[in-house]
Image 1 (tube, helix red, strand yellow):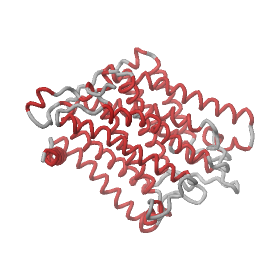
Image 2: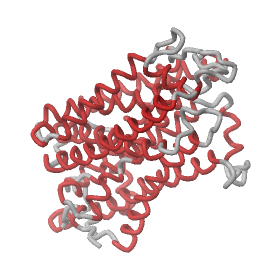
Image 3: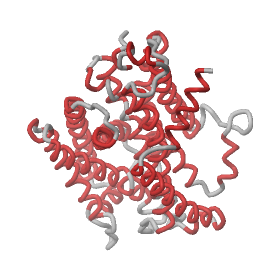
Length: 416
């Protein structure tokens, strides 16, 4: 009976809200509706309506997929200080970070689905119905780690929130093992994603042993940077008590991660440019243009400027502890890493093609609107998560007056 009451309250929280909440949801639903019209056209005619071709068969969709897997993996940067080192300011927001990771995984999987020319054949990968080809296929590994990580990042926060609703202590023997499992699993989801590229020996731009650590380092920048912006919005709009110390600690961790990301990028640039082999061509195309083709050059140098500027901002305590410069640095990282791991990663890997042809890819309006629709859907799911999670964490949405009087914040209850 109480579980049914909790469900009804949750549905009520999602369906009813302030005028601002309705406008926000209507805005996202409008984008989703427009995106559906473009996707229906793509579904009818095939991927030929995009700007992808045989020469460049991955584009904006897979670029967003790669980026969002990194955003999801970055939840570990909140989990470790919260659950391992018991840093209380981050403990207050770790559940929100895990729900952000779950939303990012939903979007990542949707981008893969959007990139399928024949989505009706997706059932071939479903175990017991089709053939997953595990463990031979790296794609099968990716399916398993992504869905497993999604389960972890929904099961743990939902369990904690339900316990908070009933005014009960979460069972640490249940929560802590799952939290500890989520740490290597977070590393695993982006490592396997990197291996999807890294294992293609015919594509020298991706066939580098440092690709997986570069993926992880950049992920630990973009995901936390996105969390910094979102947490400040929640603090202003939802009355969430999020301390500045939590934001400043996250920014400090971003500084370390960005240093590793830039160092590994420099090591790869040195190796390719110093040896000067034929494998230099993709990097030349990306950073300086190749045979008159240079559409990505301004994009990647803009990303380099933003990433380096953000690194300097987060490296200096005075600038990373100033909310104005903190937000500027966070936005620079969100956009800079998106360019680096999106078009800056995907397209050069196909250039030049095996016949030496250079096809300059840029996403068209179909790809842009379908991508915006998926982002809008993910934000809508995250909004619904927050509509339920934040009132429970504040103590406004629990079972009884007695529970409200005696309940402690959920983050104080989980100590091994």
